[in-house]
Image 1 (cartoon, helix red, strand yellow):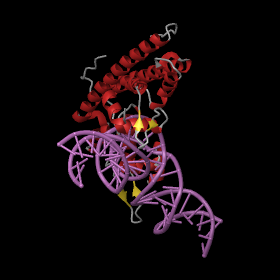
Image 2 (cartoon, each protein chain N blue to C red):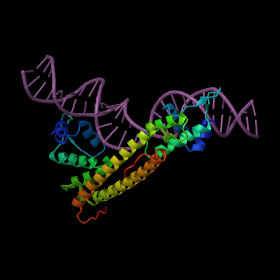
Image 3 (tube, helix red, strand yellow):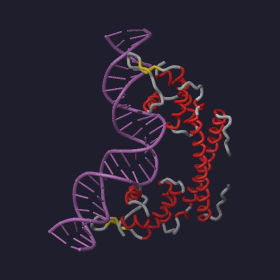
Image 4 (spheres, each protein chain N blue to C red):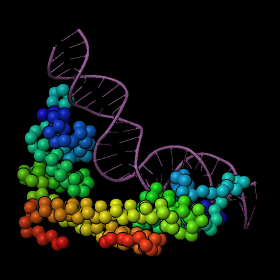
Length: 122
Length: 122
DNA sequence: CTTGACCTTGACGTCAGTGTCAACGTTTAC
DNA sequence: GTAAACGTTGACACTGACGTCAAGGTCAAG
């Protein structure tokens, strides 16, 4: 299939698909006319990438998963490197949550000081 | 005082001070040579801005606090609009935390599926 | 008079993931 | 044959809070 069909089937813009390719995540054969040619595997790849982006991964974070699928695994998380990224991501998320909780407390404290009557739930 | 001294006293780069001015948060009289002239009040203003930025406010969020101090209040949080911003910020932080917790759970679930033996604390 | 520290404005680079447009070639349908 | 719909690459725009450089004006000390 060509890029338009892949875009439609994955719900990802053609612009994004070219961007992914530009960063080495997607590879496409080219027809004699220069058009990109994709397969069913690419649909899975793109779906995997989007699922990861959706939970806060950066594009770069998805690379091991893509490599993993390319090496024959049906899911991108089946390789050691992917598992490492998962764990690193979890740690990052935990750190962000910790930071936000700290901030929340600081903001609440400032509010309480500025406006003693204002309730702050939490 | 001139911009260099203000920068040194507040620990904020001259670049940032000019950036704040560019966005209407800081105002400076100009000397006959064109140099910016600041007062002690500006030190307080900048300090307030940085304190708010440090807890996750955007520059735009600090505007009501700046206006509040300019209208004579010794602290930027003493005005109704500032209190509103505080409360909005608390809501935003809560929302972000909620989102991160959701993501954390999703990532943990994906990890568990890819690597059944991997522990996930939390 | 010169050096050097300070000031000025303007503009580009950063990070991520696209949107959008230009200017052009290809394919498909009528 | 031609127009519409598709494809190509390249490049600029956007968000936010600056860093950094360029090219120059100002001022105090020696």
